[in-house]
Amino acid sequence: MESPYQVNGKPLLKLNIQFFADPTFNPDNVLLQDAPTGKIPTEQGTGIVEEVMRNSAIMQLAKYEPMSKPVKEFQYLAGGLGAYWVNEAEVIKTSKPQWLTARMESKKLGVIIPVSKEFLRYSVSGFFNEIKPHIAEAFYTKFDHATLFGTESPFLQNILGSATSAGNAVSEVETESLYKQLNGLLGLVEDNELDPNGFATTRSLRQKLRGEMDSSGRPIFNEPTQGATQTVLGQPIAYVNGKSFDKSKVSLFTADWDYARYGILQNIEYAISQEATLTSVIGENNQPINLFERDMFALRATMQVGFMILKDEAFATLTPPVPEQA
Image (cartoon, rainbow, N blue to C red):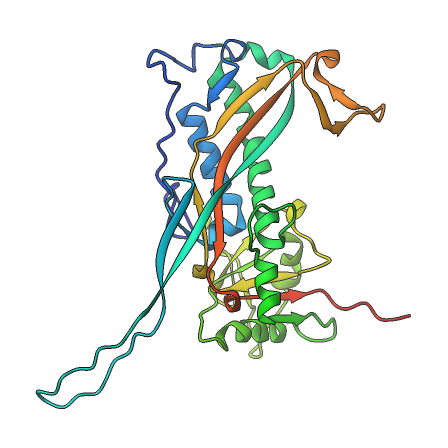
């Protein structure tokens, strides 16, 4: 059974989210209305980040890079290592490994949530216990949407863009077995001497996967018990929030996910406002919501995350069937 601090056997990063600068601050004893800005308390902040990591498909599959500053440069081995046959006492040749430098920059991710004013009388910790699932969902949904499809993304790369650049796509055919198509999809990554090690899709595809058999009549979908990772063709499968998956473009992703990297830099900070007008939220009168008029307040939470892709050909997509021409 996995530790609660692991996802798919990978350890979650260790967080060091600090309380407010005042060492006497106790979030259990301070009302939210008396602490309108600051960092989310350690327990709740850690819970939010862990929930983001458990539910973001990218964070489940990609490789984590620790970040201590907004821009991180790291080296990775791109190839060049080799072994040689030698005779006794003969000098062994030295291969020339190809080390490349990658540069990952963190970007600010923010969410604003309108909340009933009664929550101002909650303790700081009590309020964030109530609201943390909503903050986490907003963060992982937006992060997956940006990194998979490039939608409203501050990052220079995304998974769909890389797969498209590499020409790694299989178009879904309704009359052909899904097993055959997935096998061909894995082959596109393997053709580049890479090892695909996971799938990303939505739960809406799970029914179709459950009913699919390989050439020997065995199910390709395995749903183990006790919270273990579900697999397809022996590879783990991560589910993307349906709100962040554009089914008109992609049915499923696969990749050698070690070539996708992400990092988390900033502790989650928050601020509340009781008088703002939320221009991006339209009420029933087709006007932006004014918090003062509705006796509400808004919570703004922000964190900083980084993402990058090291090799385009490591990614492949199963695309929806092409509509027939009338």
